[in-house]
Image 1 (cartoon, rainbow, N blue to C red):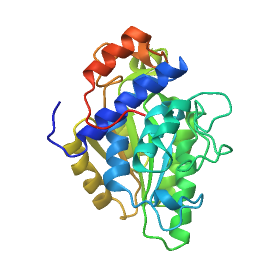
Image 2: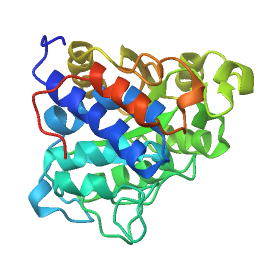
Image 3: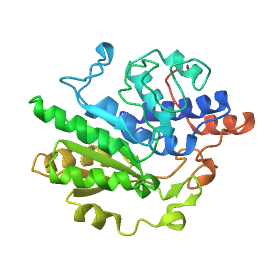
Length: 281
């Protein structure tokens, strides 16, 4: 296991959490969760100003994050737990009846770290726009981040929100796109091509950046670059290249693990590939 970045061990442990959670529930979405692990760990452990022990729904004085593609809840739950929002042991309740860790994040369960229900694709950018505008109206010098699947960009509401953000100069908003080229039914290119995605966002009035979503050092760079580019009258979008199923060889690069749980043998194989010095839940 590479130890070239101090967060690498946490990333490996979060990936262990993901495959164990989905296996334990016999359902869930491991592919995108594994692909977005490095980003979520970097965001929560290095980049956002947070107060996990005193979580509030309004998030006054904090940076905010909104997960639009809510089906990748396993990676978010793991990152939140490992960051101290709730006990790591609670990850074992994922997708169980009457628990706080439902398949898609929801607010009625009162799980710390969750400020909006998500998973109905296309809605998260609208929420992020509203939150970012509220920060501005309240005079808060804080950032709002959001994450979206590339397949999710086939939803029209995304582009309505994109126009809105540019028109209103919401320049404290930094949105990331999980650009893995896969969605539930196959390759994004085959289901509905996104065309020149960078040109599209630029035409909608956004500053467009790109990065490698699995290189923690490149993520170091892109967060700095994104914040430097923001605050100048335009929202920022980062096209983040990732591999679905990253870290588990038989899951990598295919839509077939978008929403399938590993069996006992597959779980053992996955865990054998994911070394960590941290403790499992």
